[in-house]
Length: 75
Image 1 (cartoon, rainbow, N blue to C red):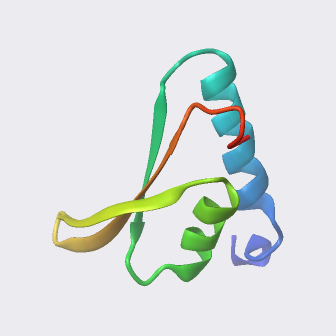
Image 2: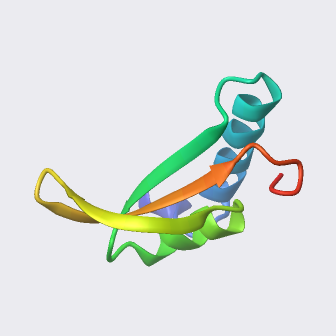
């Protein structure tokens, strides 16, 4: 799978599922928990209109919580 890293696949998939969720009124807010050291995933979240909301620990892993609301400006 590493051959797909950096090929924009994650950004396109994130945008697709964000649009799907909001267009079908499945949720008002999306969350992404990303390991604190995973810079590529943080960039995907930011490109997808998500902002850093906080940080926590999940199952001993330090993560950063990115969120976005259902706003036409975010899509």
